[in-house]
Length: 160
Image 1 (tube, rainbow, N blue to C red):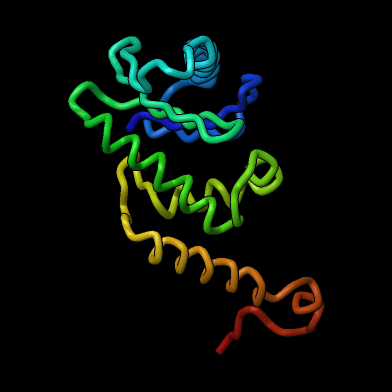
Image 2 (image 1 turned 60 degrees about the vertical axis):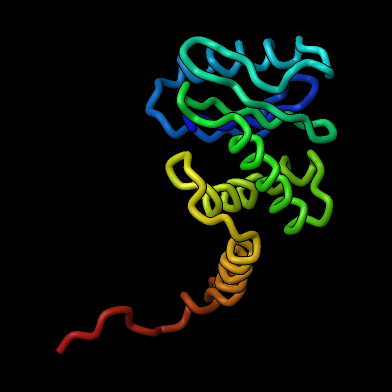
């Protein structure tokens, strides 16, 4: 997978993950072109399209489009399954995910994506394992010492 984009029906970009190095200018151009192309398509049309030298696979869930760019030899159906699995993970975590969850908790949406995909490839196919890793990270964030801990006169380094 080259990249994944999440955008609304109004064309607002909600999440972007790039697995190939591109300049910001090129990313903006690609995003603008793809959002326009996908939004212009009719609902009954195929969710796969050839674009430049890539294949675009997209799926709409409620008001969000999940759009992935894959190489020519990659499987479109597996990519659709990856999109669906990501939506399932978001649903499990947020409890029926909506666009506002992505907007206000974008760092968690990125974290879930990073636990699921690594370098554009599925690293963990088990929803249970991904959600367990996310829960553990949430617990770690909760027990991390806050500013009160830093104010104590506890030496960070011990000299011998």
